[in-house]
Structure formats: structure tokens, C-alpha cells
Image (cartoon, rainbow, N blue to C red; front, side):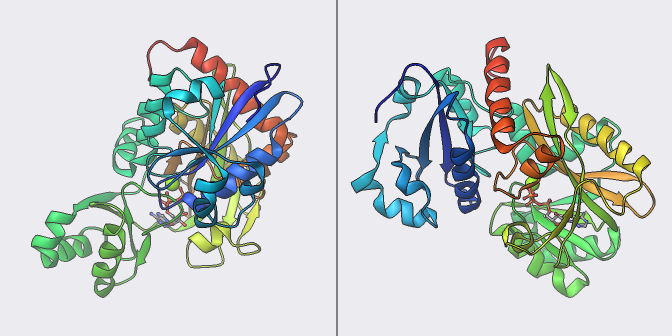
Length: 355
Ligand SMILES: Nc1ncnc2c1ncn2[C@@H]1O[C@H](COP(=O)(O)OP(=O)(O)OP(=O)(O)O)[C@@H](O)[C@H]1O
Ligand SMILES: [Mg+2]
């Protein structure tokens, strides 16, 4: 490809090795489409299912699935080695989600290569992925989180009846089972009676070797993007989520026209919205997030605010929370993408060590 020297070259990395690779494709191409071409040169970088990096020709960016892209890579794209990335790009825009993408893996690699990247560092990204460890840290900071128990695959396989009994007697029903390290609601099940426990745990074990079992929270779900500004985390806005399904499922998240979202919230009182804003900032800080994050939680019937899912990255499809809340704060998609790129470069310049 032709490299121009007058603009910062932004490598947008998408696809990847996780269950969320299709979500990542949507995020990546939307960032590609909206990257400000007056300031930056866009370099679309596709990560294949084995972790290989390819420079994509622009026409492959709008393929429907990662499989469609993968089939054409050998003939139409250019495979590069990680070591060559530094010659090709000045900064990486990580539009990957899930394992190897927002869990500290690619972040560590980019640290070794000395390439600035969007989002949090290695440790905070790993914490953003691990629902058990993150909840322990949030709890220690006095942030409300659901009560939970971790069940390992070994424990479940050796005495499933004892596990079921323990779960039934600890929290009662409903319960929520989820893989400890996943996203996009993969492997999440609402368990309404003891007969459903095995199905829920097995569904979560498809994705991870440990399952988090949480008490079910009754209330209104929210999501808030937090953006770092001059070193301070600022919540962009709060969005109230009204899923069509019994919870915020994969289809609710990504199927056009499925879920209703309200920014600012429609049914959460103003005072509680202010509490949510301060709690999402505290969660962001407790986990050491940088650049931006997406913090999800519930406004409970009791009036309390609980944080359930602090994410160190956010989906970036056109109607994502990220762009909806940016718009609410007066920023176009190009504006906020530029902000992330600029913040990332300054964070990287000020770093002492990779974390
Ligand atoms: N304790 C809970 N009580 C009630 N509903 C819950 C609970 N935990 C999760 N849910 C529902 O399940 C959905 C997915 O759970 P969670 O946010 O933990 O998963 P995720 O895969 O990390 O999602 P994301 O793609 O937003 O990162 C939530 O959006 C919510 O609707
Ligand atoms: Mg999540």
C-alpha cells in the first residue's frame, strides 16, 4: 500500500480470535468509515482467526462476515508480521472485542512494539475482562455489585448436585450464570428454578472454565461511556436500556430495531442519574481504566446503583452506546474517534512502563 507521510497513520484492528469477531467487524468498519481523513490516514488491519494480521484493501472492509473476508485474504490482502506494524502505523485503534482483543493480549504486544493504542493498558484490560476479579475490586472500593459465587468446571463435573444445592440455598431464584471472561451476552442465562441450573452452567462452560453465578438484579439497566479528558474520567451520558427479550441478549444488542435505548434515561430519576455518573467514574478509576470505557449496571428497585459489567472497550457500530452518547455530548462519530486517537497518543507518551 502507499504510505503518505503528512498524516498520522491509524491502524484500525478488527476481526480477531474471539466469539465477538463479527461484532468487531462492525465496529472496525464503522471506525474506518468515520476516521477523519483530513487528519489521519486509515489503515484497515484484519486479525484472522489464528491471530495473523492482514492489511485489507478497502473493498474487503464492507464484506458481510469475517468468513467472507477470510476466504479472500490470500488473494487480495497483504499478510504482515507484527514486527512490521511499527513501520506501517503510528497508532493502533483497537476495534477488537473479547479474548485476545480487549483482555490485555494485543495491548501487551503493542507495548512491546512501542505502538500507542486506544483504550486501557495491559492490566486494566485484563481486569475489564474478568468479571470475578473486577467485582472484588469494585466491592473493595465500596461500589455496589451483585452477590456471586464462582463455580469451576472441575467442581461442577465432580459433584454437580452439591453445586446445585449450594446455589439454590445461597441466593434463591432467579440467578444469572455467565462465563467469567466473555462479552456480548455469550453464555449468559437467567435461571428461574433448580432444573435450569445445569443448562445455565453448561452454556457458560462452552466459553470458559469458570462460571460466575450472580443473584438476579431487579431494576433498570443502564450503560455509560466514560471518556478521559486531561487525565480525568468524564461520563459522556447515561443510557437506559429496555430490552425486548427477558434480558439484554446478543440479538437485543445487535439486531436492528430490537432494543429501545433512552439517552438520557426516561425512567431513572435525575438524582439517581447523577449517582450513576459518579459510580461509573469510580468504577473506571478502581480498575485503572484509561482513555475510555463502557460501564454497565442497574438502578435497583431499592434505589441503589449497582455496577455489573465494567468494559474496557465498547462496541462501535453506528447505533452503539458509544456514538449515541457522543452525539448527546455534541460530538460526531469523527470527533470522538479523533479524541480517542489523540488521548491514546498522549497517554502513551506519558507512560512509565507498560501498565
Ligand atoms: N445479575 C444480573 N441481574 C439481572 N440481569 C443480569 C445480571 N447480569 C447480567 N444480566 C443481564 O445479562 C446481560 C449480559 O450480561 P453481562 O453484561 O454480564 O455480559 P457481557 O457479555 O459482558 O455483556 P457486554 O456485551 O455488554 O459486555 C446484561 O446486559 C443484563 O441484561
Ligand atoms: Mg461485558
